[in-house]
Length: 112
Length: 113
Image 1 (cartoon, rainbow over the protein chains, first blue to last red):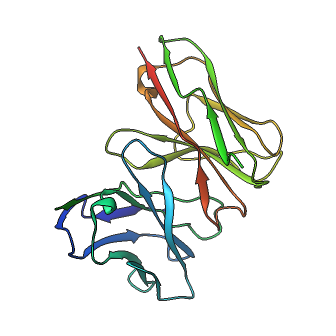
Image 2 (image 1 turned 180 degrees about the vertical axis):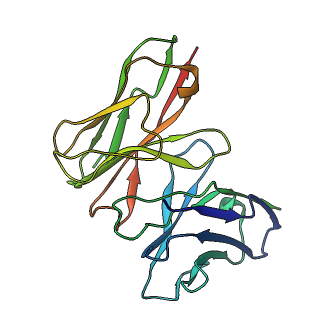
């Protein structure tokens, strides 16, 4: 099955700085790469996703980059704000599968 | 639109008791999923239903059963609860099997004593 790892597991940055979270996966046939955000006590919500025919996608302060050769994709958050504090999960879809495989999560803390 | 709803929100069981967690979605989605989330861990897939009438095991199916009652509803049953099943359970749905955004319910916090 698909092995998914996220790094780092915790990340603390100063407000206004950038944050980068990396997700590695094992299935070279994976073709869909979303990132979910979960605030404390809340449900996970999709914040950005990318498909295998695209190398980068940006939505305001967040972006996702994909390196299919190296089998990893990354979440980039610029100009971080206190409301960015949350746990972030990557969840690649293995090739041919009808499900997502979630990473263990990265706890991001934005320090004022 | 209520989106994905789950009942109950909280539940405390004794070891060996049974219960059913209910999930419903009003987005006309084909696929539905049940996950569990333990402290400090990601979401682990228990069972999923790619379409009405089908169900498949996920990563951690032991101790659980599911029923896709109709297109809207997908229930998760614990036949004989164990303390290891203490967790937060999330139901989710998506429009296309695993390809598009999964929408999550608010979760059920289950404690097994």
